Image (tube, rainbow, N blue to C red):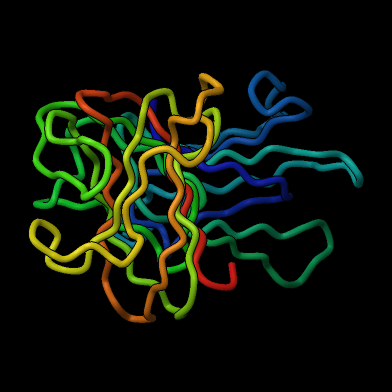
Length: 242
């Protein structure tokens, strides 16, 4: 399934800040099963950053006080960055959302050779580990488990919170953070954790870190597994002051 983001707003539009082929739709009531609004789905209505008509626009009729779910999806397997603009009825200005809240990654992508970029403002990222092991942290025992690597350059200095806690993680994670370069960089002080919080099983098998980070410095966040553990996870990155 394509990566997607969800907002509760009105009257959406995607244009120059969008770099992939989007599909935009809007639902009533329940996010997962709610009905689409009449005329509430669009594939190609306006140009994206490539100049091709591959971005989306909707002009639905909305009701005050009603909750709607706006989904930014991708055509076929398309994914990337976007700018979502929402203009309510009778408004003269637009509301623009951040291009990342939840991103889905696939097993096997995101090693040191191709780390997955995280925006400076952090966010929540769903992924899965698979394949062979390439890295190991200083805590736990991760030599036989595959991993996912994320690259993050915060824009503020201070204490960050990085975790795989919660129901989105279904295996025994080990989480660690390295300085550049990815493969050989030193771990941050206190930058490795095995068991700090519960995962989907209710056992303390997920991980949490609160490292001190420096604005403008690039870090590599590694979601690894204990022993040979692998599976799906949700990684949450909260920058200093977030």
